[in-house]
Length: 606
Image 1 (cartoon, helix red, strand yellow):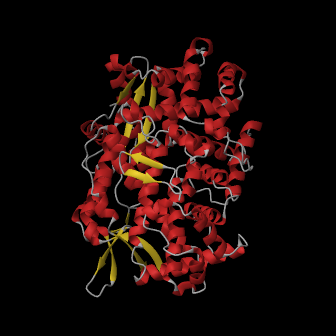
Image 2: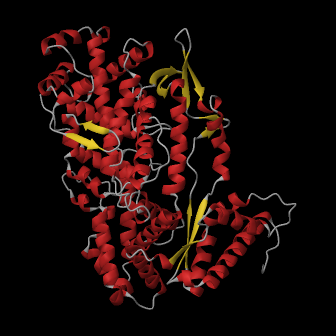
């Protein structure tokens, strides 16, 4: 028996890797996640927040496996047994039609390894290989066969959890948002028949080819598309039959790319990776506050894990929590809400995120413009292989090309450091370049005197809204919050921001911060809780119908702070009059935009 790898985790204690998982974790593209921070630039605000996507992915894997094991523990449960039978039919079809092999071959390769990690998770098949092959002939009538199917699904789900974040950019979502905006701008130009240069056309074409290549719709996030492509490299089909099968199923679980009859049972496992109460959210809601030194309370993860069950509702199989875990569910959503409020949406953390996003957006535009006046900057970008960032945004198969492993935060920060070191060389009279250098300097040196959070606290946020509301007659019922959100997303606001910088040398940035709570469809939460009555019938009930606290989260989403606003300029904190003047102009701009929407006359001064 082999058990090479045991990982000690501060959140989940020991995590045991199976031999299938070891092969993935050892891959250089997975090791890259050691240098991708989980919370972007949060360590600028919370210095101890240095944990990475690597450790988070292992934690998600551990929790996802536990959720599945607990929900399928009793294979004599009618719902569990029926689910495993359907899974057996799917697996058998995949083995014979895709791999052109047999169930016996899959079992043989598994027994050859006899990995001790499966025993630790209670998944040992206590039979000899010959005895197991005899059981296979019994098909769905053999509990040993169903146990082996459960083991296959366990391994496939754990792989899916392990690889769910494999495609993340440096600084996680922050850099991704910059690419998302750039792609949107190129599509708009293309739709308006505006000319694109050769580099822009190639970039847009590569992105379209990527969507075709991975066979997933464009509604997926960019890091998910990249992740699916990387799966081709991290999960090759050149291993034993057991690994090949688990890797194939893991891809289906992550992507939900198969809508054929029978594959819907894998959607059940996808919801463990990405759902309302999934392994991803459970892990980061524990890990992120812990790593930041924040004491937000700790929900009872063990009680929650031990109370997941398999249930069949309207023909679909779902893994849901039982009513006995309601206290843990309430605590989880409370902790997740607080983690976003005081960590992810902390004004100091958000402002560093929007700065790195703005820097990335500007560098992308400069690189693809190819303008001579930006040649010094382009030279630095080319020297540091800036194109690493989008090297996977292509529909071309590049299996074996591992250059993307360098696309991490150490590399990206060294690029920014070089830009700052050469600031005197590349700095010129171009306002765009001066703006870039100011942002790079503010980020790399964390020059907090260069940046101010206008809505630092909730009282400031309410005061801001009230000043906008005072522009209007009291008889008008105007939802100022919603109107602000709409205004910030329009080109008019971008033009206003550009005008502010042109006149005053002040960069105006905005970031939406929607509170994280339960999703509601009409008056019911999408999350359901299972109540098992005396006759052992499982009833699925919307969670808010059982919990007044969860019901209250519906109003919380609109009552809390929905956005942050930042001003950036050289030592701006030493110039309160300038800050006040720009804030007054912003309030007037938003008020007049709302008046325009409502068909009212604009205000010329306050």
